[in-house]
Image (cartoon, rainbow, N blue to C red; front, top):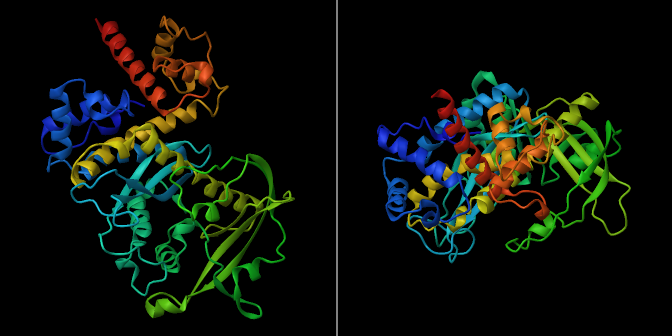
Length: 458
């Protein structure tokens, strides 16, 4: 996972800018959480960083092209692919040129909407396929979900736009299923994606109106009494309050302790009816499938896990519904990606003075955040497999001979990742390695590998 391969072929029409991008990405990747002045190392390098990010010839679209291409290649090799879609607020401490508001007019920032490709088999992050940004004007208000405007004029159009862009990037090489959380629950979105034969799984927020055997009803009426197709035992991670959580978060995502849960899964086909406020611009009804996941045998005082997922995927067998549940669970990887951007790369702390520079920086940090996330996952998943599954023989030899690391013979993936983290300054007694030390250690290892490769050619 050399960061050069994720940015090296960006074409700005000026080779100097392309070379500057590679140097900047390599410089940042060594310590992604450091400020630009500390990462640059000199006044001249810092000035070059600011000049590059503010250059009108540099655009986030061009910066991202190599990473998107590399992501498509990884998707083609991965087999089944889930594309997780989600939005995150990027807030900055002071007003910057071109920024909008987040909530009230005293806030400064924008909404970033990402499509992250994830391997369905093991939930390995494969890379970002596209980004949409939303800037809200000051003095306005946040649009409501049910406004009587066509989807093309709403913020919610970003969901369907990014699905189209991701599928266009993947082309015929990969057929991916697009997965979204409750914010994407919209009849217009379902209608647009279904009419274009897009594959999707969306968690429902609303108990939507449907046709039933007794006339008009709700999705919950259709699901009631359905036989369970699947029962599963899963580990639920803890969910704790965060300092910047809005008041609504606890209602949508109740805080909980880590526990083992027994999930019962039912499914059926439903005919969803068009909401009255939409009018004739969308079909009157949609035939889709719904999967209900509900936790059984819940203890007193515990809110049971429950999801209702609307999908174009088949629901005929236990294997069908298991694949849908697994696809939705893979969506959570994008939340870790946002943490890599905000914590591992400290993106919101960047002292850049314009919208243009901030968006260029976001594009530069995107493949770095993906790299940090992938490295972190390697240290936790497939821990006991041989390390040569993920690291080259030369990298392993360098880790084994490094005086500060001394990796043992026949190491596992977990052994190797702790060795990489140690290069970055990680102390094993401190627990699992985080984004920063893994990124630093891996970049140090890449430098050692390049030097060794040059020496071997002499």
